[in-house]
Every structure is written in structure tokens, then in C-alpha cells.
Image (tube, helix red, strand yellow):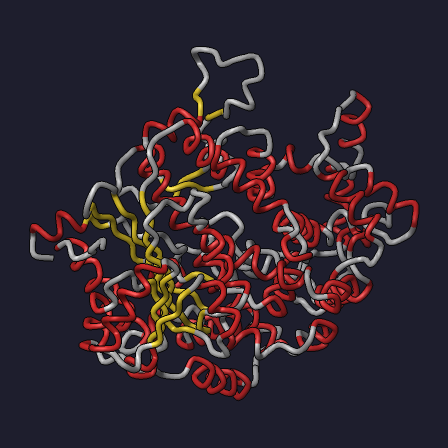
Length: 593
């Protein structure tokens, strides 16, 4: 029987369980993204500094009611209240003894073991030491489908990398969020092995990160402590091998080369990023796309229009000189100046700039729809950083390496007659762009919702808060609302690494927040416009979106990009979240960490 009692492994257990239990009990307030003190500060900033003349007497009772609602939504918990699921292996006592010492009740623990021999060994121990322990013989994905409650802490202690086919770690991670199995404020811990450096794993990681707007600096520097984010590989002048069609020259900086050189840092970044991507980006759209009612609420019912839009967006354009001239055919500087003289843009009752000029740009008639369609097509390749996951799948579809072929298969097949993950990503990306281009894919209800919300905004043309509130924000709000998104609290993320036997292991402790004080406070999509007419409710909703986007600002596929009421540098309460460096537990062990 394999044993897992190495000193550094014992240290990692004590560290993760102690941290996780404390985070959800005595430090529970710090795990919340929607902190009442932060919302109140944004309320005061909005009404005392920004909207002081427009709305001089806001109804503070609305804020107080929301704060009471928030406290009820998040609640409080003690160790004995926490429900926990973990992979137990043949020795469940290794973890359970620690949990009992922390005050967790055995009755609230589910130990999971799929291997028959390990399960029998664990069962034998439990009968003697923990007679009320629940040991599940099977896959955790199966357990998540039959439990009627959510787990506060889920610990996935994989013995393999996250890239492997067997065991397929991604199945387990994805199933937890697809089944809404994590508590509304919950901790997910993932332990995985660093892969061997190979062409296969280098191809995979470089494909995954090639279209990200920001990357951890450690991927460039090879220094673990450089965990903060900087611009992505395109801004740094790196090309992928796919982009060097005629072979690389001596002057080219090849992205795959830097990933290979700093491979452990690239895998570290991936292990911290992918669970977040699925939880807050893919999972909500998976639920929407696979629910007939919700799908009709968001999307045009004519599948041919959807299919044509996906094909158009992902087909490269061939530009001509005529195209270039057409792109420059717009309003002149002189015309703009005259318009600004006649009608200030910052005015409560103004029409939009495009309505003032003429109906040539965004009017709803057929002629202008045709003009808009001239600018559609090829965005997947022309603006890859706006479609990072879709580009990742596109990058690996022609790869022959094992990991790339496996992930491509998993994300493109329709499992159990459900819409594929790739199709869900494509639909979400279309929806987020549907208020600008590809308008035909929006359902009438969603189109009307966007229009009504935009009319209610005092700063729909900018010049008031930090960001201009663009229409895609309300699409994302609706998807996250009805698709039950989990948002990451990046500031509270903890990670470490250690070497117990032969493989180096990477630990990530995620704090995920369902943000129920926002989503449970919203009406249904059709009433968003009416709801946001009340400026007090609008400011609270937009303040929540501000705090959510602050935590995922540097993470590609983050929610509510451009929802900042205040910038990320003026006040330390509203800084952009960044991952902390990964702690080396082997060094910590020597130093009696």
C-alpha cells in the first residue's frame, strides 16, 4: 500500500486545512469580494464627489437595506458548520485528525476514493477510528451530482498534472462548477504535479497563454517571486511558431522558447488560472446554453444566424485598398469640433453623439445594419486578446501532442448531448460583442434590456466615472446572474509548492465568491432597465461590478472589464488583485515554517 506520510506532505496538510478553516470562519469577512465597507465608500464617492449636483440627496435607506441583505447572504460559520470533501487515499486519518483538531465534525466530512484497493484500506480504518465518516467509492463528479448541499471546502489532491488524460483532472474541476457544488463563499484547493518538460507540455502551455492580455512576470523572468502581472507576449514582441510561417529568423523572439526556459513558472501560472477561467467564464455560459429557456432569453432562435456569425468571426479577412479607405470614412475632426460647440457631451438629457451627428453609425434601419456588417469578420485573429480561450482551442486543434489532442477533444465534443465547451465560449464571446457587432445573434429581450439599461445611465457617454459603462457589461451581468458564476478573490489566493517523493507538487487555494448579495438582489433580465433607473440601486449594482472586476483585472476572461467607478491606484481599498508568490514548503520545513 502506498503511504503519504512524508514530513513535507504532513506540513502541507496542516497548512492548507488550517488556512482553509480559518478563512471561512474567523477571517470570513476578508474572503468576501462584496465588502460592505467598500460598497459604502464607493457610494460616498459617487454621491458626495461625482453626482453631488445631479443627485444631492440619495436615499441612504436603500444602501442600509442592501447591507442588511448582504450580511444575511454571507452569514457566519464556525468550524463545526463546515462541509468538506477531499480525496482520502488509503489513509483518511492523515487529514481527518487535523480537521477534528480544528473543530470540524466528522459527520460533515466526505472522503472520496475511486481506487478499489485504496477504498477498502480507507474503509477498514474508518470503521475503527471514524465510524460516522462518509467514504464514497467513486469519482467526485458522481458524488457532486447526488448531493443536495454545497461543500464549503473541496480539496482535490491529484497525483498527476492538470494536463493528463488519465486521470483527467479537468473533468473533476469542471464538474464542481457545473453542478454548483461549492458553497456560495467557498474554498477550492488543488494539488497537482509539475509535468515533465516536453514538446507536448510546452506546446500546450504556450498555446494557452498566447492570447492573454496579461501574464505573470515570472513567465518572462523565471523568478518565482515575480508573481505580479505585466503585458502579454504580443506587447513584449514574442511570436508563436505558428506565426512564423516561413520559419523563424535569428531576430525573432519565440514564445515557446521562453515557456520552455521558464517552464515551472508557466505551469504555476496555468494551475492558478484555469480553475478561475472555468468557474467564472465557461461554467455560467454552459448552464445558459444548455437550458432551453435561458438560451432563448439570450440568443436569437435561428441557429443558422448563430452558426454564420461564429464562422464569420473566426474566418480571416483579406483586406484590399478599398477596405482601408472605407475604414477611414467617418466623421472629420472639424465636424466633431462643431458638434462639441453646439451640444456638450456631458449633459443629463443629451442624445448620444451618434444621434447628434446623424443616423449613419448605429441607427437601426436596414441600410445602417448593412454598414455595420461591413466591419464584421475575422475578429478572432485581428483581436486575439479579446478571445483568449477560443484562440487557445483554435491554437491546439492542429497540434499532434498528447495533451493538446486530449484537451481539444474534451472541449469540442458534445458530451451527454450538451453544448460543447468551445461552442459555449463562442456563444459567450458573441453575446459580449452583440451590442456592438453581430447584433443579429441577440434575442429581442436581451436587445431591449441593453437599450433600456443604457438609457438609465447618467454617464453613458463617459466623462463621469473612471470607465465608460459599455453595453457588454449588462450582457455579462445577466449571464453571471442566471448562470451562477463563481468569482475569484485574487487577493486571498494562496499557493505553494513542495517535493515529497519524486515529483514537484503545486498547491493552489482558491477563494471563490458566488456574490449572492449582487445576483440575488437583481430582478430578472427584462426588468434591469427599470431597476437601474433608481440611481441608488444603480450605484450599488455598479459598485459590486467594480469590486468583482478589480479582482480579475489581470486575468484574461475576467468579468466586467471596464466597470471601474474608481481607478485601481487612488485608494488601497480598490487596487487590482494580484497573486502572491508561490511558497516553497521544503524551505519552510527546514525553517520550521
